[in-house]
Length: 208
Length: 208
Image (cartoon, helix red, strand yellow):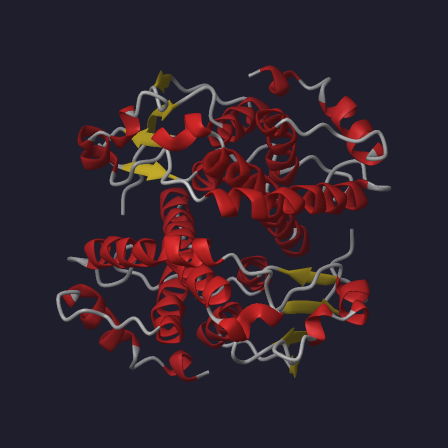
């Protein structure tokens, strides 16, 4: 099949999944127009968006032929293959598996628990989610466990998977910044997260 | 870094995530020893397993150098790169993104909701999970929505992402078979799922 060309990204600046894509593109040095959609006003829930894209989700990568890719990691994967310089999903078979594992572990053990606490527990989020308060509560200890796992993994590692910055670091830093929405601070005992965060803060991509 | 060689897979035959890996390996034609662990007896929760592997999870891919990769999709990714013939994560940049998107959508919109209904609702599963009954209930309608999405995507497509069988089909068929654990049947109205399932049933990989 002929390959469509990327045209623009439809996103919301406040959404952590959208930030993952912006950081990824900044790290790769890729420029693409961004179009904002107001998720708190429910614009992504309108049938117009769903009919066009096939799902009520952001971010969306729109192609020149009118097709769309959703899922932040799938959008990042597209650009990894489209523009292979400066790989962020690993280089060797083993490293690619290690990055995939840690990208998923950080997403499922930290980013999602934070999102569950927020989306199912904060009354303002009821516009986005049919809330289940018990699930918000159930995820509070999981957030702390996820932080322990990340801190332990960063002990002696410069980045999440070792010497190379990767998509796993992007998911992790987006998660750490997202903690403020559920009023959780990084404990001073999380020395490895604090050192790694300080190191990452020097990267230009962190300001996007 | 030198690349460790795959040694064996630690898994449980009843777990859907383990079945994803077995089908994947059968499709690729890769042989590797399997070692069983009894998850219902909590063997994966023992400190011995966690100390060795770093997490209470199966499946686990063990390497000759004593290192481990967890997360079924990361294990599949390793073998995709290690043995590139018969690609199951897509070929072009666009196709790789499409496969990643649908693998994730089927996982998050169908496999996980089924797992949430089962693990948080069935008393036998309390050995695996601190249960949240409200979350089990909340996921029942999501399972049906996930089936609608899959059926719609299969309308006019031979496989989930189009003409080529991929990891997205593996996640989807494992999800469909997993429905029996929550006593949900495929409605006769889901004609595209039924046609696709019948087509897949002819593959040798489905019997693993």
